[in-house]
Image (cartoon, rainbow, N blue to C red; front, side, top):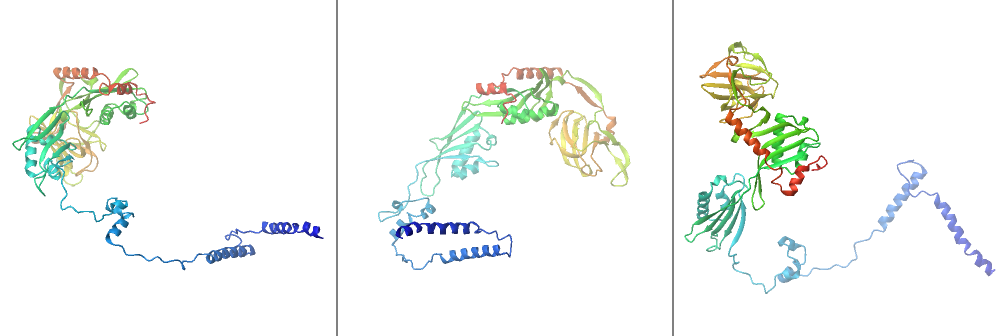
Length: 498
């Protein structure tokens, strides 16, 4: 019997476990309460959920019965030492650690000693003055005035560009609250000039000029255009300013859509290099595109100051002057002539002191002859208006413009863009109101011929060709160094990820 009991005893728990497994295998513990709403399965799942919530609430730990720690009062020294070991010292400059807390050994100073000298670096901001800048740096009014007088003796103060840094050395103040004396001042006044002011024994300032040897060899960059001339030029190391001027010059004479992959771009830009490694990028002087081994476009900047423009080398020829009727808008038709007419807006007859030339909005308006701009701005019913003085008591007027391309006092050449067609003022649509005055009296513009010059005079043509030769003799990438020269001479289409 005993052996039989021993053999049956282990069987009972295993059978029970198997029975429970079979019962639980079909039981759904995670019922989706969004399905079968109202069924027995749904109510069973709801009961399980509520039961679980109740069990969780019943087992939630209480907060009573714990020990209460009463705070103890601390004296001032202990409070400072405790504070120095918390995060609060971050509010007082980041002091941390027990040793930062003051103790009885701390002796307060009645007055902190000042530095015997102070070195500052200050920058001349845009629309700022040297006087205001030195005043903010703590320079006294007397030293401020003496320093500016000394600087003006070496270079005009208005030629010191914004962004220039001044290195100041201030000495020890004579007493509490007194300004520190200016002992020395140094700056880069120009790209090729360093100035240093030092205090003399007499109390004034002595100026020392240090002229820097600057290499002014123009920078020439050649490269092969890929999918983008801009990216190819960037990959060749061309300065951003030069690229912008190059693209504008080429696009004005040859559409950039006509520049294809494999064409060669060539540019020469004014470029200065100082011994300390600083560079100064000037204006673009030469721009060219070569396609298939032939020169597609070759441009040279010609003229002085604001009158300088890019001219096509192939168009330059010896001057031949003729008298001809010059139209200020290309391809325009006459929509209203000179004389008495019924005004289309005012509704009554009055003198029309010009000729209306119908043209699309934004079409360029050209000067009919060399002139000086003597008026630019709004002019009554003419809207945006330009008046040019051609000399010899002859002047021309251009009205209803959408925008201007010149300013008063500017010299313009025949064929130069001065504005763009619009419909400002008393106008029914985009067109140009063109006037001609002789001795101040209006005359029919279609009866006045202007001198048309094909090319330039012989001396200017020789100077132009000499200047073009100088540009072509510049070694490509001479200003970039060996590495830059290699990049500029390659500039393949595959080297344009920038």
